[in-house]
Length: 111
Length: 115
Figure 1: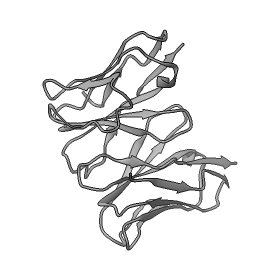
Figure 2: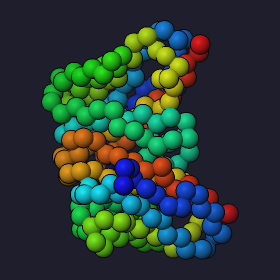
Figure 3: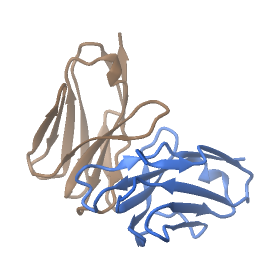
């Protein structure tokens, strides 16, 4: 079945630094979504990417969908303490079908 | 309502007990999903409804798990004869349409502990 892997599992970042987290799917995706889950909270939708090679930005966050639609990345610039949490990518093989979540990247920010 | 509402927030069950978890999605949302999230893991798909139709239940771990959404609104996930490995957070998510273009809105979850 479809598998979605994320690396790194943990990311310790100094406040103000940049970092990137990566997501890889075992199968070609129809779309990929990114979610953020704060400690003790629930996943909150950030963005959806649909097109091959698509790049979207939300303030300090840049999301990219690979050309083959099997991988994605999230790049955060100038990390802030509010960025603490776990970032999940979730892929769908067909529009409206179930999302398969990766294991997440847990981000800790050192002030 | 303004968001996806789940109840109870916490549930402690004795091994062998039956439990029922409720999800009240955002009004008008067509798609409804149930996910299971173990500690430190990503959410794992359980089942999917489009209105009242259960279109995919491939993620249900065993026949002890049963979900329904009889009127296409509120959904209930029932677990019979609970076992310790059922301990997890059960998340419900809903989406306005089946394409999920605007993402899925998750509820706060029900944390189930089986003792």
